[in-house]
Length: 82
Image 1 (tube, one colour):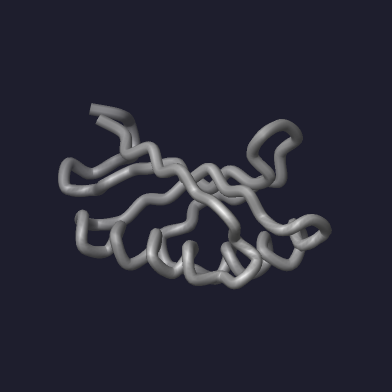
Image 2: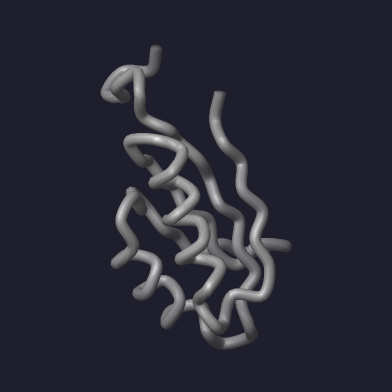
């Protein structure tokens, strides 16, 4: 088990493409979502990478849904850690 992670926690990374020029605005919105541990602007095919950690899959689903509902978010890919 990873140090600092409780057995029941769910960890994931969300790769996000946003509309041009909205990176900073989306970053601020992401940092207010429950479960977001880190959010970083990146260069490459993905504009932002988010580290999520929640207590269970239901909370993870809520966090991912909230991310996808941000109007400037065009595409996401979620990687749930094993």
